[in-house]
Length: 229
Image (cartoon, rainbow, N blue to C red; front, side, top):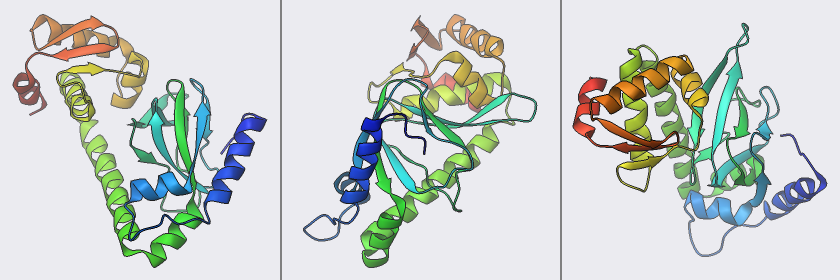
């Protein structure tokens, strides 16, 4: 993980100091455990949280803002692997290094937790172990869903993305997108022009409404679902 200033270095040391403390009062759920053991760090827009092939020494939880994970391909194109919103845990790895890089999409606050301490706690606490397993399983399902998404047509990909974001939103049919259209394009494996064209087509069909470039109102979820197949 890159530490961008002295304040962040101090916060990382604080996270390591907290790592020796276990929440009191029975078996803790993963969220509460991470809050007790971790320390919140600020990341400005486009700041790197960690880089590809860096040691996976920490786990992360988005408190506010949003994060994208990505790879830069051999031809220079960027493929975004996932978006993480408040409440999401990221940085889980099967090996000892990160397979993707992670950046803050907007000004964000991220909880940083020492991986070795959390794993040691999981060895002693079945509930924490179960929660970690569930989180790893959720991450695997997201990867599988993303792979299947990339074989769909452009309109199917955009419709599925909007439904996914609406499912993760707390505003009902009004979805605030923290990411840019370029981010969406790089996530869906499309050009930004294609994404914009598909959004316009969906708006013209009265399936969605686009009050702004970052706000989407789903007017007909069932129609979006039919498009997804």
